[in-house]
Length: 167
Image (cartoon, rainbow, N blue to C red; front, side, top):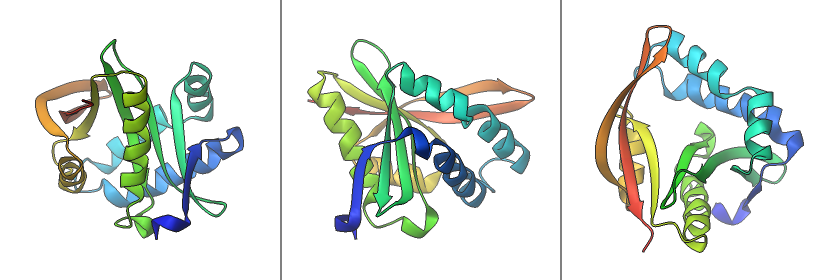
């Protein structure tokens, strides 16, 4: 199925469809992992057109996975430090999961990190998100630490930091 998928930079006219896709994915995937109110709080924090365009303007990379003209997944990544490149977001529409699209997106991000000389690719994942953790382990990431962060309004992120060596 991945032969029908094209991965490339997110276009400005895809920002709103990306937000719609993120909302659908989060509302389908995160119940049972985090409370519904936290889902809505985090969507409102992270998926605003102006914020996404601002990150694009500063040089962050937003990759879009497309099946024809349909946006089916995306990844957001950027330089985190001198040696680390961060995969900040990676999501695939529930109807398109388990078809290698997440792997394609991961490969694009890892290739970019490697070609730019970064030593590690890192990410954060909710400690209760077993499906995502299993996928990241499959793609060579290792759990390196635990982070609990207050994100406001009484909500916390309870995450693993996972890393993958780029050597």
